Image (tube, rainbow, N blue to C red; front, side, top):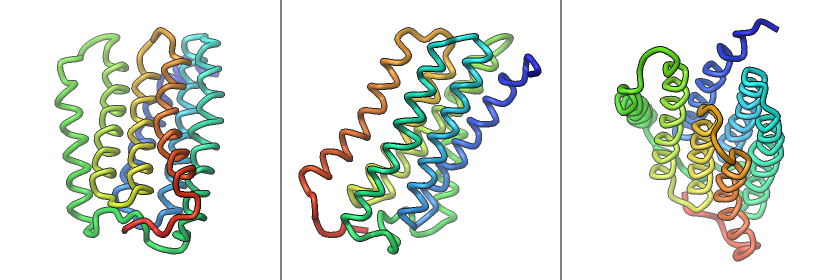
Length: 210
């Protein structure tokens, strides 16, 4: 493998995570939004593996395995179970912004805000870190936009999950972050707790508001 290839590929994969977060704001179909979250989880796994190769880190391989089990598999399955119980599979539930253009403009504005906020982190070896943190903060902010745009608890859980993916992306971008597996587990536990709590407290509830 080309030595610099993982360092080159990781930001590209992070950009794809950001693009998928845009779909959570723009798409009206619940199942499509869950598929986008699963795609984000898979991309996070690949990013963790790229960093593991680049830094020769067994810890990042463990983190990649945790992300594969949690964000790429179990969380989307739990959200699909929520959809099944609420009868929303074929409906435009968890409604995002009804008008595509304002939602897109707002998302792009948040990305620019993230870039400006992290602009002081410049130069030399910090450039790759800056790129990763800009992408991560952008995903977090767009996740907040998705939470604000969606009305029902399912939509809130989808936005929260994307926000968590942004936080995980940022954690992966920081070299030698202490206790990274623990950080990943705690971050993944937040949307899992929200979904599990709803499924436990409202096992066969009616449809969420759209």
